[in-house]
Image (cartoon, rainbow, N blue to C red):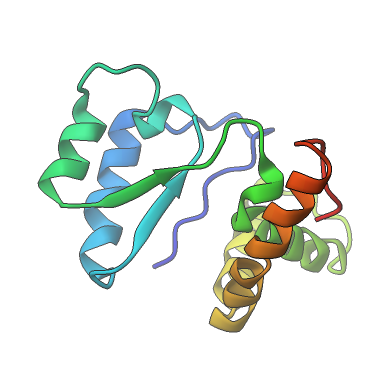
Length: 141
């Protein structure tokens, strides 16, 4: 079952305990060559040099991971996927009930295809080049 992290405007927050549980559930199904790309959010255990339970779990599960530069959504392919989901949700019209919205988000997440994910990832070389050309300023992706 795919996991949908609540929107940042949601009152639900993910913490290290929730994140470690998620990793324990999801990562055993990954292929050996998968790399987890994370931002600098606290639950991901990336802040600071101290060893924490998230870093310990990543070591135990042999999870390969890379950091996405902080404040660089231009270089994060998941932002493209979120945009697709948001566009699809808008086409449904206004949803007033939280339970209905959660169900709609899950349905749209489930519809995301591997082709859409691969297309988002395939734009990375062009994104990096555009970012370099603009000296790190935002790019149109």
